[in-house]
Length: 170
Image (cartoon, rainbow, N blue to C red; front, side, top):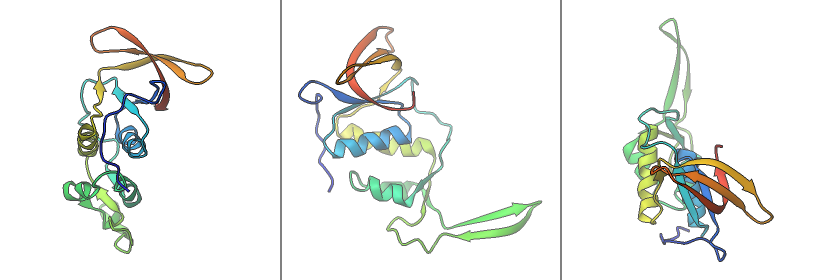
């Protein structure tokens, strides 16, 4: 069941999940956890979204899971369905895989640039008042008894301590 967007200031102790990196995985995780009612903040050390794709397919099962919290059909509209893969050697085809038998509502998946995937995910999260904090870098973190204290460097050059749970690439 999709949860309507709503802002949150963390749990009863002001604690929230902190996502390091605003790539497809971090944004998808933030969307899923937000749908489950988990407070989160997302940051990325980069100033803007990359125009280089490291991921160029969103698979059908991922779209099914995303559809539980947002309209995943947008990915199908923007991308191109994965139907077949042909393999070549020396300019001649030697194998072909047919993906059209996939029973998912979303098929096998869609070919979509990573920047478009991130734009769609950020758009949904923005509607939920979850905005990626760009040019913000995790400098260090320290495990406490019940939480983690993070030290972040923000774009304006200052540092900030936050109490949180951490998810993402470190």
